[in-house]
Each structure stands twice: as C-alpha cells, then as structure tokens.
Length: 359
Ligand SMILES: *Cc1c(COP(=O)(O)O)cnc(C)c1O
Image 1 (spheres, rainbow, N blue to C red):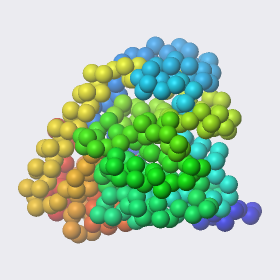
Image 2 (tube, rainbow, N blue to C red; image 1 turned 180 degrees about the horizontal axis):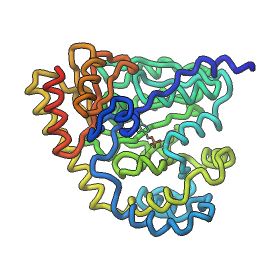
Image 3 (cartoon, helix red, strand yellow; image 1 turned 120 degrees about the vertical axis):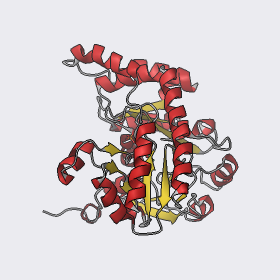
Image 4 (cartoon, protein in one colour; image 1 turned 45 degrees about the vertical axis):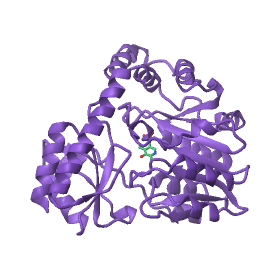
C-alpha cells in the first residue's frame, strides 16, 4: 500500500501513560501520577453531578451545536456565541484548524520544544512544520516572525508554553503580531491560562476584533479537571468558524462532555480551589526541591521542569519503582530534565521523598 511520504515519516505522540498501564508494566501499585499536568483535586463535583443526571439520556445524540454550553461560555468570555468552536479536546481544534485552512506544502511556524501535537497534526495534514528553537526556554517571537514566508499559513504560540512553563509578555506578543501578515492565522494556545500569576501575560481574546487573525484555544482538561471527558474550544473570527463547522463532525463533542463542561464553568469554588492548591503546591515543591540542590525552572503553569544535571531517564525509572510517575523530557530535547505537575500536598511530599532517594 502506498502511503503519503509525510504519513510514513510521522513520529507517534508518546503520551503520559495511564496509571493503570504503568502499574501493570512495572508490577507496582498505589502509585501517584504527576506526569500529564492533570488537575490534582479531581473533577469538579458540580460537573460530576450534572454528568450523573445526564446518564439516562445516553441513547440520544448530543446537541451538535452545544447550544447551552456555547451560550454560557459566550457570556462568561464576553464574546459572541458564533465565534466559538468546540472540539473533542482542544487537540481536535488544532486538527480542525489544520484540516480546514492548510493546503499540502503550506508552512506552519511553531516553537520547539512545545506541545507535540502541533507538529504531528500539521505533518499529518500534509503541511510543513517550521520549528523555531526557544531562547532561554522562552518562545523566540522575533525568530518566529523572521521565519514567516509567502508559504506560511499558520503560527502556533503556546502561552504559557508546555513543557517550559514560560510566557511571552503582552508587549512582545503585540510587537510580534505587527509583523504577521493579515492572512496568516496566529493560534494562541492558552491551555494553562488559569494558572498564570504574571500580570504581563496577554490573552488572544483581546485581539479577536483586531486586523490580524488570532485564534484562542482553551480546554476543560486542566484547571476544570475534565481531561477524561475530552472537551476544549477555540474562539475566533466568524469568517473562520463557518468553514470549520462544515469540516467538523456534527457530533464531535459528546453529550456528557457538554453537560459536564457547562456545570464546571459555573463551579467557581472548584476553580479557585484548584488554582490555590496549585500555587501553594508550587511554592512548597520549589522550596523542597531546591533544598536537594536541584534547580527548578520558573513556571506560570501547574507543572515545571527540574534540571537533574544527569540523565533523567534513569531517575525516572527509579522514581517509577518508588511509585511516583513523572515525565522525562528526552523527547522534548531536554535529556537532563523531568517535568512534574503539582499534586495534592501528600503527593507533593511523596514526590520529594522519592526524588531524594532517586538521586
Ligand atoms: C493539555 C494541553 C492541551 C489540551 O489538550 P486537550 O485536548 O484539550 O485535552 C492543549 N495544549 C497544550 C499545550 C496542552 O498542554
């Protein structure tokens, strides 16, 4: 069978494995997972209640327009409801953007290292990823602007950036935007925006009406604790939503995801508790890890990198046997680093104890 060359060359995405799978593989139990930037406190209780109530409707197709969720989210974000596209996770929005707007051979500028799905989706869609190395672990917006060519169709800006946890400032983003041609789509992926403490951080929503095309991606997977439900969205100009609705599957977000996201959206107490748990946990972890003589890189998210100054894979393996799952950063080009996300206080303590043993 003849496959397109760009499909043959696709590198598979290696996800943080589900806890059950790792425990099976390593013959361990009672482990904790700090490897996929998930919400430490669980799903929103209001979402759980709403989902439980909706189970009896599972014989029905979902609402293809996500009517109630769309309406409530539009109110919350103060944007018009027809500027929102929902997806099966914001991963699907990335895919839909590529499928809708990219032609084979078009270039897409993206930071490296960053979220691996950008490269995978673009390549799978026949586009050409143009990767621009970070500068001191921050997106090099100047370098990215310099890579724009007549073939450039889209630019990914991950803010804050996964896996480094860094942000670009509003001033730097605006300067960059000036240099972007009006027909190029700038995708601002804000999966971790709720955790940001730095007041200079921009949001793409402020540029919705500007003369440049800025798409804002958000997700219910992190701060809202619904990663397993798979729901995220993009906010963009109506000239973009219309073609995307024609490309997407009519029932791309499932019934429980819509109901759960709607309830989570109004669970302010849950969001506040999540953010404060994460911020307190970060302060604790930075203090304790630095006591071990290791360097933590500053973050604006619920995760951060630790420079182990030695091969991280073996530390990762040792920690795994101690029942603590972290993410080695070899695939991201940082072979001496691990990435961990904040857990519950007792999980954070266990992490520190197991790390101390492992080094
Ligand atoms: C987790 C994450 C997402 C969200 O993915 P979902 O498909 O919504 O779960 C998007 N972008 C980045 C950078 C992420 O880390």
